[in-house]
Image (cartoon, rainbow, N blue to C red; front, side, top):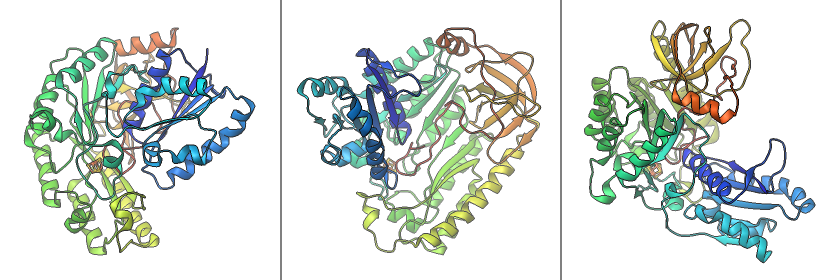
Length: 490
Ligand code: SF4
Protein backbone atom coordinates (compact mmCIF):
# COMPACT_ATOMS: atom_id res chain seq x y z
CA UNK A 1 0.00 0.00 0.00
CA UNK A 2 1.30 3.43 -0.89
CA UNK A 3 1.56 5.95 1.89
CA UNK A 4 0.72 9.65 1.74
CA UNK A 5 1.29 12.87 3.62
CA UNK A 6 -0.47 16.19 3.09
CA UNK A 7 1.44 19.30 4.16
CA UNK A 8 -0.87 22.26 4.64
CA UNK A 9 -0.09 25.97 4.60
CA UNK A 10 -2.46 28.87 5.07
CA UNK A 11 -6.06 29.30 5.97
CA UNK A 12 -8.98 27.26 7.28
CA UNK A 13 -10.11 26.84 3.70
CA UNK A 14 -6.83 25.10 2.98
CA UNK A 15 -6.95 23.04 6.15
CA UNK A 16 -10.44 21.93 5.23
CA UNK A 17 -9.35 21.25 1.61
CA UNK A 18 -6.55 19.10 3.04
CA UNK A 19 -9.14 17.04 4.91
CA UNK A 20 -10.68 16.41 1.50
CA UNK A 21 -7.33 15.59 -0.11
CA UNK A 22 -6.70 13.02 2.63
CA UNK A 23 -10.21 11.62 2.16
CA UNK A 24 -9.70 11.33 -1.60
CA UNK A 25 -6.34 9.62 -1.22
CA UNK A 26 -7.65 7.15 1.36
CA UNK A 27 -10.61 6.43 -0.89
CA UNK A 28 -8.10 5.63 -3.61
CA UNK A 29 -6.29 3.16 -1.33
CA UNK A 30 -3.46 5.26 0.09
CA UNK A 31 -2.71 5.11 3.82
CA UNK A 32 -1.23 7.83 6.02
CA UNK A 33 2.57 7.64 6.29
CA UNK A 34 3.81 6.73 9.77
CA UNK A 35 5.34 9.61 11.71
CA UNK A 36 8.93 10.30 10.76
CA UNK A 37 8.80 8.36 7.50
CA UNK A 38 8.89 9.97 4.07
CA UNK A 39 5.63 9.17 2.33
CA UNK A 40 5.32 7.62 -1.12
CA UNK A 41 3.13 10.57 -2.07
CA UNK A 42 3.76 14.01 -0.56
CA UNK A 43 1.13 16.65 -1.27
CA UNK A 44 1.79 20.34 -0.64
CA UNK A 45 -1.43 22.28 -0.17
CA UNK A 46 -0.02 25.76 -0.60
CA UNK A 47 -0.94 29.30 0.33
CA UNK A 48 -0.17 32.37 -1.76
CA UNK A 49 -1.02 34.84 0.92
CA UNK A 50 2.13 35.07 2.93
CA UNK A 51 5.19 36.99 1.97
CA UNK A 52 7.83 34.72 0.43
CA UNK A 53 5.37 31.83 0.20
CA UNK A 54 6.96 30.76 -3.08
CA UNK A 55 10.50 30.82 -1.66
CA UNK A 56 9.33 28.57 1.12
CA UNK A 57 7.60 26.17 -1.27
CA UNK A 58 10.62 25.86 -3.56
CA UNK A 59 12.84 25.42 -0.49
CA UNK A 60 10.64 22.57 0.73
CA UNK A 61 10.53 20.99 -2.71
CA UNK A 62 14.33 21.21 -2.82
CA UNK A 63 14.57 19.39 0.51
CA UNK A 64 12.50 16.53 -0.88
CA UNK A 65 14.55 16.15 -4.03
CA UNK A 66 17.17 13.75 -2.57
CA UNK A 67 14.38 11.46 -1.29
CA UNK A 68 12.86 11.44 -4.75
CA UNK A 69 16.22 10.66 -6.37
CA UNK A 70 16.65 7.77 -3.93
CA UNK A 71 13.11 6.51 -4.53
CA UNK A 72 11.94 7.27 -8.09
CA UNK A 73 8.51 5.78 -7.27
CA UNK A 74 7.91 8.58 -4.84
CA UNK A 75 5.51 11.25 -6.11
CA UNK A 76 5.23 14.92 -5.20
CA UNK A 77 2.07 16.93 -5.84
CA UNK A 78 1.54 20.67 -5.39
CA UNK A 79 -1.93 22.15 -5.05
CA UNK A 80 -3.66 25.14 -3.46
CA UNK A 81 -3.46 28.87 -4.08
CA UNK A 82 0.22 29.08 -5.00
CA UNK A 83 -0.24 26.35 -7.60
CA UNK A 84 -3.20 28.28 -9.01
CA UNK A 85 -1.09 31.44 -9.07
CA UNK A 86 2.16 30.03 -10.46
CA UNK A 87 0.47 27.59 -12.85
CA UNK A 88 2.97 25.65 -15.02
CA UNK A 89 5.86 27.59 -13.50
CA UNK A 90 6.16 25.05 -10.69
CA UNK A 91 7.18 22.13 -12.92
CA UNK A 92 9.59 24.42 -14.75
CA UNK A 93 11.31 25.50 -11.53
CA UNK A 94 11.07 22.09 -9.84
CA UNK A 95 10.94 19.47 -12.62
CA UNK A 96 10.92 16.64 -10.06
CA UNK A 97 7.32 17.58 -9.14
CA UNK A 98 4.84 15.01 -10.52
CA UNK A 99 1.49 16.76 -10.24
CA UNK A 100 0.28 20.36 -10.08
CA UNK A 101 -3.40 20.96 -9.42
CA UNK A 102 -5.36 24.13 -8.72
CA UNK A 103 -7.91 25.31 -6.19
CA UNK A 104 -10.80 24.36 -8.46
CA UNK A 105 -9.86 20.76 -9.10
CA UNK A 106 -8.69 19.11 -5.89
CA UNK A 107 -10.95 16.16 -6.77
CA UNK A 108 -8.60 15.27 -9.65
CA UNK A 109 -5.60 14.51 -7.43
CA UNK A 110 -5.76 10.65 -7.39
CA UNK A 111 -6.31 10.51 -11.17
CA UNK A 112 -3.46 12.94 -11.84
CA UNK A 113 -1.09 10.91 -9.63
CA UNK A 114 -2.01 7.75 -11.52
CA UNK A 115 -1.67 9.47 -14.88
CA UNK A 116 1.75 10.86 -13.93
CA UNK A 117 2.87 7.39 -12.83
CA UNK A 118 1.74 5.71 -16.06
CA UNK A 119 2.89 8.47 -18.42
CA UNK A 120 6.15 9.05 -16.56
CA UNK A 121 5.75 12.80 -16.84
CA UNK A 122 4.36 15.66 -14.83
CA UNK A 123 0.64 16.32 -14.99
CA UNK A 124 -0.62 19.87 -14.62
CA UNK A 125 -4.33 20.56 -14.28
CA UNK A 126 -5.56 24.03 -13.38
CA UNK A 127 -9.20 24.85 -13.92
CA UNK A 128 -10.40 28.42 -14.06
CA UNK A 129 -13.61 27.80 -12.20
CA UNK A 130 -15.14 25.33 -9.82
CA UNK A 131 -16.76 22.26 -11.36
CA UNK A 132 -17.74 20.26 -8.31
CA UNK A 133 -18.45 21.87 -4.95
CA UNK A 134 -15.59 20.47 -2.86
CA UNK A 135 -17.89 19.38 -0.02
CA UNK A 136 -19.21 16.57 -2.18
CA UNK A 137 -15.74 14.97 -2.12
CA UNK A 138 -14.73 12.34 0.43
CA UNK A 139 -13.33 13.94 3.56
CA UNK A 140 -11.10 12.65 6.30
CA UNK A 141 -11.94 14.84 9.28
CA UNK A 142 -9.13 15.60 11.65
CA UNK A 143 -11.31 16.08 14.68
CA UNK A 144 -14.17 13.80 15.75
CA UNK A 145 -15.77 16.53 17.89
CA UNK A 146 -15.42 19.80 15.92
CA UNK A 147 -15.80 20.19 12.18
CA UNK A 148 -15.77 22.84 9.51
CA UNK A 149 -18.58 22.94 7.02
CA UNK A 150 -18.24 25.11 3.92
CA UNK A 151 -21.24 27.23 3.03
CA UNK A 152 -19.49 28.95 0.15
CA UNK A 153 -16.20 29.19 -1.66
CA UNK A 154 -14.69 32.19 -3.44
CA UNK A 155 -15.38 35.87 -2.90
CA UNK A 156 -17.00 38.64 -4.92
CA UNK A 157 -15.15 41.43 -3.13
CA UNK A 158 -11.97 43.03 -4.36
CA UNK A 159 -10.03 44.05 -1.26
CA UNK A 160 -6.79 45.48 -2.61
CA UNK A 161 -4.52 43.53 -0.24
CA UNK A 162 -6.14 40.17 -0.96
CA UNK A 163 -5.27 37.53 -3.52
CA UNK A 164 -8.21 35.27 -2.67
CA UNK A 165 -10.67 36.45 -5.38
CA UNK A 166 -8.01 35.94 -8.06
CA UNK A 167 -7.27 32.40 -6.91
CA UNK A 168 -10.54 31.12 -5.50
CA UNK A 169 -12.83 32.80 -7.99
CA UNK A 170 -16.31 34.26 -7.59
CA UNK A 171 -18.42 33.23 -4.63
CA UNK A 172 -20.31 29.99 -5.05
CA UNK A 173 -22.94 29.14 -2.46
CA UNK A 174 -24.06 25.72 -1.43
CA UNK A 175 -27.74 25.07 -1.08
CA UNK A 176 -28.91 25.24 2.56
CA UNK A 177 -30.28 21.68 2.32
CA UNK A 178 -26.81 20.37 1.39
CA UNK A 179 -25.14 22.29 4.21
CA UNK A 180 -27.68 21.07 6.75
CA UNK A 181 -27.44 17.48 5.53
CA UNK A 182 -23.67 17.59 6.04
CA UNK A 183 -24.07 19.07 9.52
CA UNK A 184 -26.67 16.43 10.38
CA UNK A 185 -24.38 13.63 9.18
CA UNK A 186 -21.48 15.02 11.22
CA UNK A 187 -23.63 15.18 14.35
CA UNK A 188 -24.62 11.56 13.83
CA UNK A 189 -20.92 10.71 13.78
CA UNK A 190 -20.45 12.41 17.15
CA UNK A 191 -19.51 15.97 16.22
CA UNK A 192 -20.69 18.55 18.79
CA UNK A 193 -19.42 21.74 17.22
CA UNK A 194 -19.49 23.01 13.65
CA UNK A 195 -17.99 26.14 12.20
CA UNK A 196 -19.70 27.35 9.05
CA UNK A 197 -17.00 28.48 6.69
CA UNK A 198 -17.00 31.02 3.86
CA UNK A 199 -14.85 33.98 2.80
CA UNK A 200 -17.84 36.22 3.36
CA UNK A 201 -20.69 34.40 5.08
CA UNK A 202 -22.91 37.49 5.05
CA UNK A 203 -23.33 37.34 1.30
CA UNK A 204 -24.32 33.66 1.52
CA UNK A 205 -27.52 33.17 -0.43
CA UNK A 206 -27.12 36.09 -2.83
CA UNK A 207 -26.22 33.62 -5.56
CA UNK A 208 -29.53 31.77 -5.17
CA UNK A 209 -31.57 34.87 -4.51
CA UNK A 210 -32.02 34.89 -0.73
CA UNK A 211 -30.16 37.69 1.05
CA UNK A 212 -31.37 36.49 4.43
CA UNK A 213 -30.20 32.93 3.87
CA UNK A 214 -27.34 33.01 6.39
CA UNK A 215 -29.50 33.99 9.35
CA UNK A 216 -32.01 31.32 8.33
CA UNK A 217 -29.20 28.77 8.12
CA UNK A 218 -28.10 29.60 11.66
CA UNK A 219 -31.65 29.17 12.91
CA UNK A 220 -31.97 25.86 11.04
CA UNK A 221 -28.78 24.65 12.75
CA UNK A 222 -30.60 25.35 16.00
CA UNK A 223 -33.08 22.61 15.14
CA UNK A 224 -30.42 19.91 14.79
CA UNK A 225 -30.59 17.74 17.85
CA UNK A 226 -27.22 16.92 19.39
CA UNK A 227 -25.48 19.90 17.78
CA UNK A 228 -24.21 21.86 20.78
CA UNK A 229 -22.12 24.63 19.28
CA UNK A 230 -22.38 26.54 16.03
CA UNK A 231 -19.80 29.13 15.01
CA UNK A 232 -19.05 30.84 11.73
CA UNK A 233 -16.25 32.63 9.97
CA UNK A 234 -15.85 35.12 8.45
CA UNK A 235 -18.50 37.79 8.43
CA UNK A 236 -17.96 40.98 6.45
CA UNK A 237 -18.95 44.28 8.05
CA UNK A 238 -20.27 45.66 4.75
CA UNK A 239 -22.82 42.89 4.34
CA UNK A 240 -23.57 42.16 7.99
CA UNK A 241 -27.30 42.47 8.64
CA UNK A 242 -29.33 42.62 11.83
CA UNK A 243 -31.21 39.41 11.08
CA UNK A 244 -27.90 37.56 11.65
CA UNK A 245 -27.53 39.25 15.06
CA UNK A 246 -31.09 38.22 15.93
CA UNK A 247 -30.43 34.64 14.76
CA UNK A 248 -27.27 34.50 16.90
CA UNK A 249 -29.05 35.83 19.95
CA UNK A 250 -32.17 33.68 19.57
CA UNK A 251 -30.68 30.34 18.58
CA UNK A 252 -29.40 28.61 21.72
CA UNK A 253 -26.67 26.56 20.07
CA UNK A 254 -25.19 29.48 18.12
CA UNK A 255 -22.29 30.72 20.20
CA UNK A 256 -22.04 34.33 21.29
CA UNK A 257 -18.75 34.77 19.52
CA UNK A 258 -17.98 36.89 16.51
CA UNK A 259 -14.77 37.18 14.57
CA UNK A 260 -15.31 40.24 12.37
CA UNK A 261 -12.31 41.61 10.42
CA UNK A 262 -11.79 45.36 10.94
CA UNK A 263 -8.52 45.69 8.95
CA UNK A 264 -8.33 49.44 9.64
CA UNK A 265 -10.18 52.03 11.70
CA UNK A 266 -9.42 54.80 9.21
CA UNK A 267 -12.09 55.49 6.60
CA UNK A 268 -9.44 56.73 4.22
CA UNK A 269 -7.47 53.48 4.49
CA UNK A 270 -10.62 51.35 4.31
CA UNK A 271 -11.41 53.11 1.04
CA UNK A 272 -7.90 52.41 -0.29
CA UNK A 273 -8.31 48.80 0.82
CA UNK A 274 -11.61 48.75 -1.08
CA UNK A 275 -13.42 47.64 2.06
CA UNK A 276 -16.86 49.07 1.49
CA UNK A 277 -17.77 49.93 5.10
CA UNK A 278 -16.56 52.69 7.34
CA UNK A 279 -15.54 52.78 11.01
CA UNK A 280 -18.94 54.08 12.08
CA UNK A 281 -20.74 51.14 10.49
CA UNK A 282 -18.30 48.69 12.06
CA UNK A 283 -18.82 50.17 15.53
CA UNK A 284 -22.58 50.19 14.98
CA UNK A 285 -22.56 46.43 14.35
CA UNK A 286 -20.53 45.87 17.51
CA UNK A 287 -22.94 47.99 19.50
CA UNK A 288 -25.94 46.03 18.22
CA UNK A 289 -24.22 42.67 18.82
CA UNK A 290 -23.45 43.72 22.41
CA UNK A 291 -26.97 45.00 22.97
CA UNK A 292 -28.39 41.64 21.86
CA UNK A 293 -25.65 39.50 23.49
CA UNK A 294 -23.87 41.31 26.34
CA UNK A 295 -21.64 38.26 26.87
CA UNK A 296 -20.42 38.15 23.23
CA UNK A 297 -16.67 37.79 22.69
CA UNK A 298 -15.69 39.75 19.61
CA UNK A 299 -12.37 39.34 17.86
CA UNK A 300 -10.89 40.83 14.73
CA UNK A 301 -8.08 41.08 12.15
CA UNK A 302 -6.16 44.33 11.73
CA UNK A 303 -3.51 45.28 9.18
CA UNK A 304 -0.97 47.91 10.22
CA UNK A 305 0.97 49.97 7.70
CA UNK A 306 -1.22 49.62 4.62
CA UNK A 307 0.22 51.81 1.82
CA UNK A 308 -0.45 55.47 2.53
CA UNK A 309 -1.38 54.92 6.20
CA UNK A 310 -0.50 58.05 8.17
CA UNK A 311 -0.12 58.44 11.92
CA UNK A 312 -3.58 60.00 11.91
CA UNK A 313 -5.01 56.92 10.15
CA UNK A 314 -3.28 54.69 12.64
CA UNK A 315 -4.70 56.71 15.54
CA UNK A 316 -8.16 56.10 14.04
CA UNK A 317 -7.46 52.35 14.21
CA UNK A 318 -6.37 52.62 17.84
CA UNK A 319 -9.53 54.55 18.54
CA UNK A 320 -11.79 51.85 17.07
CA UNK A 321 -9.83 49.22 19.00
CA UNK A 322 -10.37 51.13 22.24
CA UNK A 323 -14.10 51.44 21.57
CA UNK A 324 -14.57 47.85 20.37
CA UNK A 325 -12.89 46.16 23.33
CA UNK A 326 -12.01 43.07 21.36
CA UNK A 327 -11.45 39.89 23.30
CA UNK A 328 -8.68 39.17 20.89
CA UNK A 329 -7.18 40.64 17.72
CA UNK A 330 -5.01 39.12 15.04
CA UNK A 331 -2.68 41.91 14.07
CA UNK A 332 -0.51 41.95 10.96
CA UNK A 333 2.18 44.15 9.56
CA UNK A 334 1.32 44.95 5.98
CA UNK A 335 3.74 43.43 3.52
CA UNK A 336 3.62 43.33 -0.25
CA UNK A 337 1.64 40.40 -1.67
CA UNK A 338 2.55 40.02 -5.32
CA UNK A 339 -0.46 39.97 -7.59
CA UNK A 340 -2.60 42.22 -5.38
CA UNK A 341 -3.48 45.84 -6.33
CA UNK A 342 -1.93 47.14 -3.10
CA UNK A 343 1.46 45.69 -4.06
CA UNK A 344 2.04 48.44 -6.60
CA UNK A 345 0.52 51.32 -4.65
CA UNK A 346 2.66 54.36 -4.01
CA UNK A 347 3.40 55.38 -0.43
CA UNK A 348 4.44 51.99 0.92
CA UNK A 349 5.08 52.66 4.60
CA UNK A 350 8.70 52.15 5.75
CA UNK A 351 9.24 48.92 7.66
CA UNK A 352 10.48 50.67 10.80
CA UNK A 353 7.32 52.79 10.98
CA UNK A 354 5.10 49.74 10.47
CA UNK A 355 6.96 47.88 13.23
CA UNK A 356 6.65 50.74 15.69
CA UNK A 357 2.90 51.17 15.02
CA UNK A 358 2.41 47.43 15.23
CA UNK A 359 4.03 47.33 18.66
CA UNK A 360 1.77 50.12 19.91
CA UNK A 361 -1.31 48.33 18.60
CA UNK A 362 -0.29 45.00 20.12
CA UNK A 363 0.40 46.66 23.50
CA UNK A 364 -3.03 48.30 23.50
CA UNK A 365 -4.85 45.14 22.47
CA UNK A 366 -2.95 43.02 25.03
CA UNK A 367 -4.09 45.39 27.74
CA UNK A 368 -7.71 45.19 26.57
CA UNK A 369 -7.63 41.40 26.12
CA UNK A 370 -6.27 41.01 29.62
CA UNK A 371 -8.85 43.36 31.14
CA UNK A 372 -11.63 41.51 29.30
CA UNK A 373 -10.26 38.14 30.42
CA UNK A 374 -10.04 39.30 34.04
CA UNK A 375 -13.82 39.83 33.95
CA UNK A 376 -14.13 36.06 33.49
CA UNK A 377 -12.46 35.24 36.85
CA UNK A 378 -14.98 33.64 39.18
CA UNK A 379 -17.31 32.68 36.34
CA UNK A 380 -18.45 29.15 35.65
CA UNK A 381 -17.79 28.01 32.10
CA UNK A 382 -18.53 24.92 30.08
CA UNK A 383 -15.43 23.89 28.16
CA UNK A 384 -15.22 21.56 25.18
CA UNK A 385 -12.08 19.52 25.85
CA UNK A 386 -9.51 19.62 23.05
CA UNK A 387 -6.81 17.23 22.03
CA UNK A 388 -3.45 18.37 23.22
CA UNK A 389 0.19 17.75 23.63
CA UNK A 390 0.97 15.99 26.88
CA UNK A 391 2.82 17.75 29.65
CA UNK A 392 2.12 18.41 33.26
CA UNK A 393 2.23 21.76 34.91
CA UNK A 394 4.42 21.59 38.05
CA UNK A 395 1.77 20.83 40.63
CA UNK A 396 -1.50 20.64 38.77
CA UNK A 397 -2.40 18.51 35.84
CA UNK A 398 -4.29 20.59 33.32
CA UNK A 399 -6.02 20.00 30.05
CA UNK A 400 -7.25 22.61 27.63
CA UNK A 401 -10.34 23.46 25.68
CA UNK A 402 -12.55 26.24 24.45
CA UNK A 403 -15.34 27.98 26.32
CA UNK A 404 -18.59 28.79 24.55
CA UNK A 405 -17.21 32.18 23.53
CA UNK A 406 -14.09 30.47 22.13
CA UNK A 407 -11.76 31.59 24.92
CA UNK A 408 -8.92 29.18 25.52
CA UNK A 409 -9.16 27.63 28.98
CA UNK A 410 -6.51 25.55 30.76
CA UNK A 411 -8.37 23.66 33.44
CA UNK A 412 -7.31 21.43 36.31
CA UNK A 413 -8.34 17.82 35.88
CA UNK A 414 -10.74 16.61 38.56
CA UNK A 415 -11.11 13.05 39.85
CA UNK A 416 -12.02 11.73 36.45
CA UNK A 417 -10.03 12.53 33.32
CA UNK A 418 -12.11 13.83 30.43
CA UNK A 419 -11.49 12.81 26.86
CA UNK A 420 -11.18 15.23 23.94
CA UNK A 421 -14.75 15.96 22.94
CA UNK A 422 -16.13 15.71 26.49
CA UNK A 423 -17.52 18.78 28.24
CA UNK A 424 -16.25 20.00 31.60
CA UNK A 425 -17.70 22.65 33.84
CA UNK A 426 -15.06 24.73 35.57
CA UNK A 427 -14.64 27.89 37.58
CA UNK A 428 -12.15 30.44 36.24
CA UNK A 429 -9.49 31.25 38.82
CA UNK A 430 -6.95 33.28 36.86
CA UNK A 431 -6.79 35.28 33.64
CA UNK A 432 -3.87 35.91 31.30
CA UNK A 433 -4.13 38.03 28.14
CA UNK A 434 -4.51 35.00 25.89
CA UNK A 435 -5.98 32.30 28.07
CA UNK A 436 -7.88 31.56 31.22
CA UNK A 437 -6.94 29.17 34.00
CA UNK A 438 -9.61 27.23 35.85
CA UNK A 439 -8.33 25.37 38.87
CA UNK A 440 -11.76 24.34 40.12
CA UNK A 441 -13.31 21.43 38.25
CA UNK A 442 -17.05 21.40 38.91
CA UNK A 443 -18.28 18.66 36.61
CA UNK A 444 -17.63 16.38 33.70
CA UNK A 445 -20.10 15.41 30.99
CA UNK A 446 -19.06 12.46 28.88
CA UNK A 447 -20.28 12.99 25.33
CA UNK A 448 -20.82 11.13 22.07
CA UNK A 449 -17.91 13.16 20.72
CA UNK A 450 -15.67 11.82 23.49
CA UNK A 451 -16.86 8.29 22.64
CA UNK A 452 -16.08 8.95 18.96
CA UNK A 453 -12.61 10.22 19.89
CA UNK A 454 -12.01 7.14 22.03
CA UNK A 455 -13.21 4.82 19.27
CA UNK A 456 -10.69 6.45 16.92
CA UNK A 457 -7.87 5.62 19.31
CA UNK A 458 -8.83 1.96 19.08
CA UNK A 459 -8.41 1.50 22.82
CA UNK A 460 -9.52 3.11 26.05
CA UNK A 461 -7.62 6.32 26.27
CA UNK A 462 -7.58 9.66 27.97
CA UNK A 463 -6.56 13.10 26.90
CA UNK A 464 -3.04 14.12 27.66
CA UNK A 465 -2.23 17.12 29.85
CA UNK A 466 -0.85 20.30 28.41
CA UNK A 467 1.36 22.88 29.97
CA UNK A 468 0.06 26.32 30.76
CA UNK A 469 0.28 28.80 27.97
CA UNK A 470 0.65 26.19 25.31
CA UNK A 471 -1.50 27.32 22.44
CA UNK A 472 -1.41 24.30 20.16
CA UNK A 473 -4.31 22.34 21.44
CA UNK A 474 -6.21 20.65 18.74
CA UNK A 475 -8.74 22.63 16.79
CA UNK A 476 -12.05 23.16 18.51
CA UNK A 477 -12.59 26.21 16.34
CA UNK A 478 -10.54 27.94 13.70
CA UNK A 479 -8.37 30.89 14.53
CA UNK A 480 -7.59 33.36 11.82
CA UNK A 481 -3.97 34.34 11.59
CA UNK A 482 -3.46 35.77 8.17
CA UNK A 483 -5.04 38.94 6.90
CA UNK A 484 -5.65 38.19 3.33
CA UNK A 485 -8.85 36.87 2.94
CA UNK A 486 -11.28 36.45 5.54
CA UNK A 487 -11.23 33.13 7.29
CA UNK A 488 -7.57 32.86 6.90
CA UNK A 489 -4.86 31.63 9.22
CA UNK A 490 -1.81 29.76 10.55
S1 SF4 B 1 -10.27 40.07 2.30
FE1 SF4 B 1 -12.04 38.71 2.48
S2 SF4 B 1 -13.73 39.96 1.62
FE2 SF4 B 1 -11.83 40.92 0.92
S3 SF4 B 1 -11.45 40.02 -1.10
FE3 SF4 B 1 -10.30 38.81 0.41
S4 SF4 B 1 -11.65 37.10 0.95
FE4 SF4 B 1 -12.91 38.67 -0.06
